[in-house]
Image (tube, rainbow, N blue to C red; front, side, top):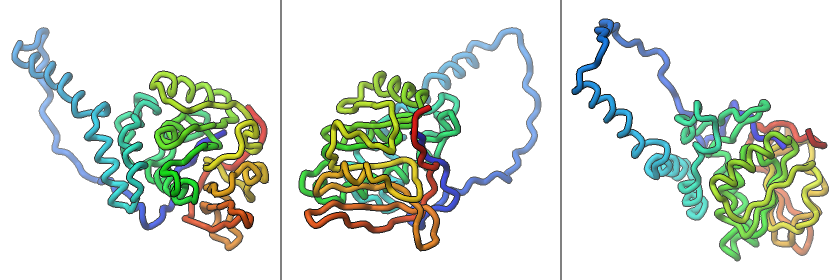
Length: 274
């Protein structure tokens, strides 16, 4: 199952980050070439090479700055914010893109798929936390994730759940996520290679269901596998002409109740495996 495409227009709660691409630096004189560097200069270069590691991608402060931005944008679920501050997002992207890992941006992970923006991951999981079972238990319970992608969202969900079952239809992404999660020793997470439109009946019902691809309608299999008191959050086409939106579905003893959330743009939901 695929991950999400970048969102061209974002909800107001997640303002876009502006980059200044028009600045022009002053020309500099060419460096003097020497067959051997002065010892003092070499020592300074070595210090610069080593020093950034403690302040770089492997450090908690970098992740906490991402968390602070999410909190400023309105995310209020503290367990979720703590989980996103612990999961190493840079470990789930190509090393060439790691410097952008904690920006609020989607990044390519191969096969024309992307890792979702932190703000989108946070908003969808926060919706799950507002479900009846999650509120009463203080955690998401048994989670079904449709679309493993590179495994980042599964790793976040694993911090908040009793078990995560994550289904991916693209074999290469399924294997990529398995390598990531095994290397990072992510607990309580089982990956399934299969057709996400069918959900995963062997472990149903689920307290929480979250999807990373959207179609015209939510598959009946997902709704059938949602537990009483459970909540489903997934993108689908809105009948009111807004395009693709988040759809939030709650199962109560009286049946299914749905509401519409923010406008989003995810990759199309497809059946079968590849």
